[in-house]
Image (tube, rainbow, N blue to C red):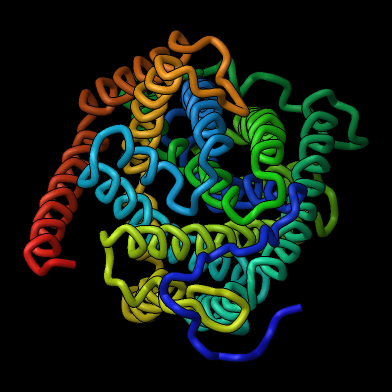
Length: 460
């Protein structure tokens, strides 16, 4: 039972004195954070960029995320911590590296939160144009800030049912899409596989590279499972189950959905702006397009909910390790880091104001901003696991969950990352994004190093 008291907890008190989140909630949170704007909006952008060859982008990114999640699962089961991969990077590579990864991921989620609020608002506006996009986004930001302040138990249950709804909707979408492609729908001509075979890669390697970063954005957020493990019952067992479940479900949902979209809608279709609704409209199911659009709104809000949780916990963990202002460790009410929630949600409110000033220009810019940051976070997780696993093996330390195929599969993940970076630098659009990301990392690392030095001099 949550309390309404706003009395601050002592700074030294742990964020999770009891494990309030259920294993089923952890599993569905992993789905909730990943099945959001990237799938319901970004999949259409991916098909526009690469045509049906976007499936290659999804297969490459999907293989990479499986390896990353296995690596993260091993570390999270051994050391469930709200700082997750930031803490693991600190232990493997040093304090500055850990702080840099933590802040990079926090910034990524802060941008994603804003993108998902605006994306959900834009979708809802398309079927209910009574309230402007910026106002709907503002309402969403207020509501989900309140949910995250209510305590992890309430948050986890809310996220569980959100995720259940969108998983059910995607299953129905796949069923309708399969029936359409197989010609099983009455009075509806099947496109067959003609859209896939006519021009598989209209933009060549450059299109696949551009789509790859849209896809990376889509899979971003899955790693939140490792953050939430710290507040989950029996984290050693829960993490293993969540990792296995989330990985295969996401691959089925993503690759299955994108296959249906690419097969039904040509790369030049205007319906790709809302691809799920476009497919269902092609199937001539009355009201289905509107229904799936409303489900997509729920999906984006679910992802917003999960990502706000992850961002606030990362800010809290950074503050605990003196890599962020200490006031962010203060706990209020239902044992919630209220100030960490506040700083994590602030940019979402700013983006709402920007949408009012620059309509329909903010969401595309946000999509482009965060794609490649996921790659750096995932790379840090693989490198950390490679180092920490070797240390544990040398010391004879038992691990509750061991990644199979080590070190070969970890190295394979790093090779895939290297290939993605190489392909990204070969294309002009993604090259600019990568340079921007590395410049951002350098700036964060410099700030973290200077902050650590100042902290040492102050004697803290």
